Every structure is written in C-alpha cells, then in structure tokens.
Image (cartoon, rainbow, N blue to C red):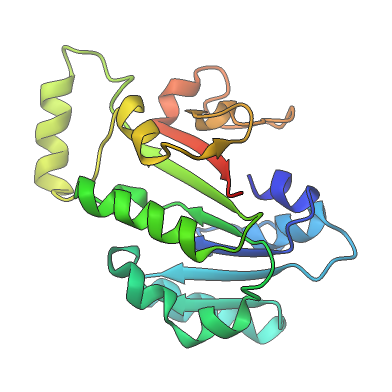
Length: 214
C-alpha cells in the first residue's frame, strides 16, 4: 500500500498501529519504503502507537536521524483525542492530500465505534486523500476448528475484533476502493515480490483495502 500510494504522488502518511519499528531493520521500515517509491520527494510520516515501549523505542531510534518522521502516543480507540494531538495537527499539512493507514482495526471491537472511526478519518482527511485498512478475519478458518480458535482468542485476546469480509466491506461502504478492492492482504498489488502467504493468501488471516476520498 505504501509503495503504491507513494508512487502515485502521496507525500505524507499517518500510519496508525503499525507497531513501528516492528522488528524491521533500518532502511526497510514503512517510511523508508515510501521514500524509495517516491525518490526526490520529502515524504513525511507520522506513526501513531498506543504501546509506550514502542513509542519510546521509535522516538529514540528514528526521530533523531530525520526531520521527516514523527512518532506519536495515541490510540485509535480515542479517535477524537488522537486527531487533536499537537504533532498530528502541525506536522501534517491538512490542506493537502495524505494517506491514512489504519493497521490496528483489530482493536475496534465495537461495531458502532468502528464505523465512527472510519467516518471520522474520512471527514478529517483533505479531499483527494486515501484511507487504507487492514483487518483480521476468521473467514479462512475451517469450520471444524472455528469453535476452538474462537475460545483460544477469547481467553488470550478478549477484545480482538474479528470480522467477516462482508462486515469489513460494510466499514468501507460508500468509499471508492482502489483496485483490486477488498482482498486478502497478499493479493493487494503484490508486484512480484516474495511475500508471506503468497501461495495461500487466505492464510494471512487479514483483508486489506485502500479507499480514495473524493
């Protein structure tokens, strides 16, 4: 998603819940990928994370080396407060298009609030922006295993939001989806790269989509 949007000319990103730095080495994180896809442009990236350790690590290892990346302590479950953060308000140019990538939708276990978050981001972003979404699903879990998997998740991750393709599509209702639409993550413009689960996309357990905000 980052590669495609940066190549299309998007030069500012707000990435929510990526877990930066996610164990990726320097030069291979999402802001690095954006810059490689858009050489010569000053791509600006704001990461929003709700894990204090992740925030502290990223602020110590990324921010001192670039003026084009900021890491913010915020939570999509408090979307209004998140958007009012001083860094988010001032680092992003809200008069120009940006890409908002919501990678932590699994934390939105309340359907009504999940719909509100998508609408809130849609209305907050300037015209011409993009909204990317990743979402966990059990659609590919065999029926005979589903009860056991649900019980395990309920015990270990009791507030993990799991939605079917139809329910994820409902979150994006009314938005103009960029091709190939709502698909298994490895199927979203793989570009010939060696991706995990490429041979069995449903094994990723996640749907992905990018919507254009007119």
